[in-house]
Amino acid sequence: MITCEEFFAEFADYLENQVSLEVRQELELHLSQCRACHVLYDSTRKTIRIVSESNSFDLPQNVLEPIIDRVMAKLRTDPS
Image (cartoon, rainbow, N blue to C red; front, side, top):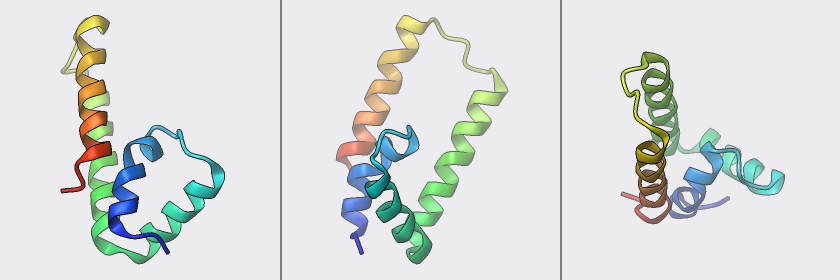
C-alpha cells in the first residue's frame, strides 16, 4: 500500500482525473484504509463542489487559471 506522502504527491492529479488506472486503484485502496487521507479527500471534494456551485467567484478566465494552477501546484508539493 502507498504511504500518505505518496498519496499527497498524486492527490491533485487524482482530483483532476489525470492519473493512470493503476495509480487510481492504488490511491483508492489507500483512501479505503486511511481515515486521515479520506477526510482530506472528502472535504476537498465538498469544498470544490460548494465553490463551483455557488457562482460566487465569477472571475475572468485569465485571472482564474493562474489561481487554480497555484493551488494545484501547492497540493502537489505540500503534503501538510
